[in-house]
Length: 252
Ligand code: PGA
View 1 (spheres, rainbow, N blue to C red):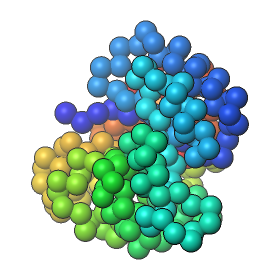
View 2 (spheres, rainbow, N blue to C red):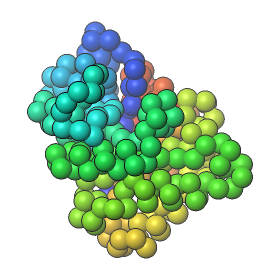
View 3 (cartoon, protein in one colour):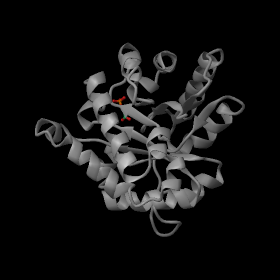
View 4 (tube, helix red, strand yellow):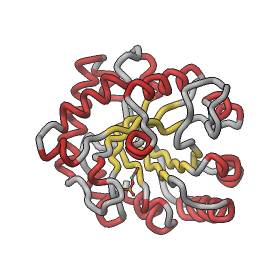
């Protein structure tokens, strides 16, 4: 059975004090929830990973990184490697977020290298991808998503998919307040699952969690999560407020 996941991508938000307060708040608000097969994840900035991990200790909250560099070490000022994340106990990393792709020039080829470096260090990956508005308008969204998956992930062996979570995030829905309709999300998720089945096996397709991301909020979470191929969400803005994030977790 694949896991349900609610993951908060904090992006470049929350200083040290705010990180402590937010983890504490989430911890308190999910304490009594029956989270059987549901993972609750937060992704703070690099500088606050250790603080968040300390505050999340002995709770079910998982603390993950938002990014990493593909190299092991070296002259890459300002970057962090998979080895470094692993050395402080991080187990999962988000790769390929649309902001990394568009603002920091991360290409499919770079992402494939990052994927390999993460897996070599036994890090689980939450791999993000999704089409631009122009792609959807020209009805190229399925092709774009297919090529992002092929270029970033389809060089992997089936076994590696035990450590991959997918996050479909249509770029036009990220931080815009505009959400893909539950039907649009389901249609794309079913397409992705079919790609996994064709490239790999039914088992890979059935056991890979596929999250939806893009303006998920308390008011729309339940409907999106009710779709059969949507296994949870990657949440930006609404993950920064305890009440909103907790409401989204409840929705799942
Ligand atoms: P949003 O961000 O929920 O603020 O749209 C989602 C994301 O970027 O992962």
